[in-house]
Image 1 (tube, one colour):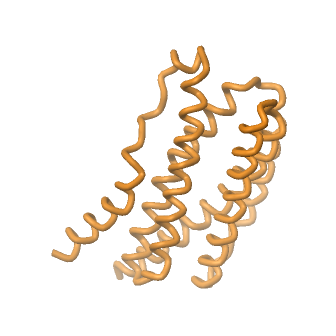
Image 2: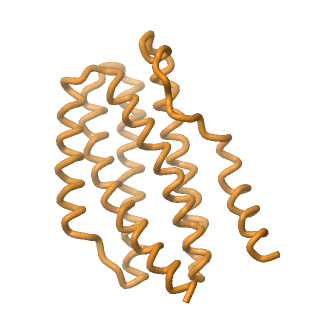
Length: 182
């Protein structure tokens, strides 16, 4: 019963992640096109590409679980992503950087949680991929946090809690797994 419950939770979180990656990719497309600094454009474009890759990986996981994306979430994600991408052109520099960083910090936790559900339902084959995506999302969050902190107004903002070092993602996961088996 617990494995079935974890399987359903895994499917639900992967469905959310799949649509979330769509929104993020379109938002980043508008974001990188709105910035003038070439290095920022390149990095944010790379982040967009990584979001598309994550979407592909999550889609493959859903398929292997005989599950599908949720159509109304997909439609909503498409609209949100496109609108945010357009707003990047009119909101200035700081707001998109701040919003992206805050969003990415949640994505780290989402993929860590999904890895736990994968372990709980016996899908050990998903764990490395999910933790790798968590690490990539950590890098995205770190990039945007750093950009915000460079801005004179950004230094005065109350930022979301700083994540622990990236290396702790796998250590924490393995530590949690050891507690469950002892």
